[in-house]
Amino acid sequence: MVGPTAPGRPARAAVRVLIADDHPVVRRGMGALLSSLDGIDLVGEAATGAEAVREAQLLRPDVVVMDVQMPTMDGVEATRRLRAAVPGVAVLVVTMFEDDETVAAAVRAGARGYLLKGAGQEEIRTAVLAVAAGQLVVGPQVAARLLDHLGHPASTVLGALTSRERDVLDLLARGHGTAAVAAALGLAPKTVGNHVSAVLGKLGVGSRADAVALARREGLGWTGPP
Image (cartoon, rainbow, N blue to C red; front, side):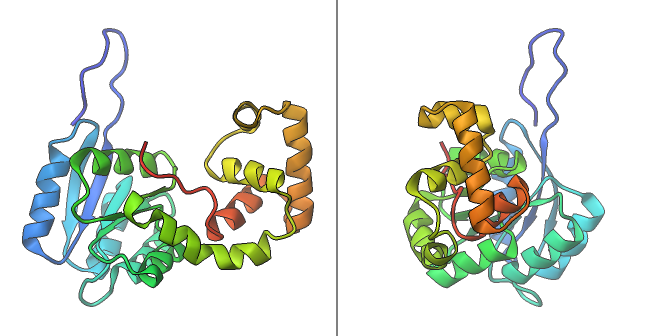
């Protein structure tokens, strides 16, 4: 469904969503909720992880709303395979499981968002649109625990960075460019560039993209829905 647009402006394409959940009632309920929201177009459903991977390859949605516990292939493995087969698709995990290892496993598999079932309608809509836009989203119920769980390896991998360099890297991992980072931290763009060069050298990577990928693996760059 797409909301009204101003005269003379092209309508913005709706975000195409596939739902993967093994419980028919939950799947239908989530489908009805998503179908009622502006800017979202429900294009398919799957009852298992294997079906989710197959349907994502056929339908090419923008976002897969993925449960964790499903038969034949769980949501974590399905996320891993889906991200390998269809890299452009974003996975938003929506599940009742909030234990640290499940959350961390989903993130490592490539999920770009993690919400608990019971999240409000606007929270779900915001999360779907955010992950479709390339942002990382985690519900407030699990954010602190996720960062704590992923923060231990980060302290080793990112330990050589100064606090300012870490702030710069965190903002880059949130999708901000040099100008936005400079404005957020009250720095000159050239100073931000110097920090970025230092970060690349200390992390031993050759590009901003590599640094951002490493930072996200280590738990930086996560935001909750605004």
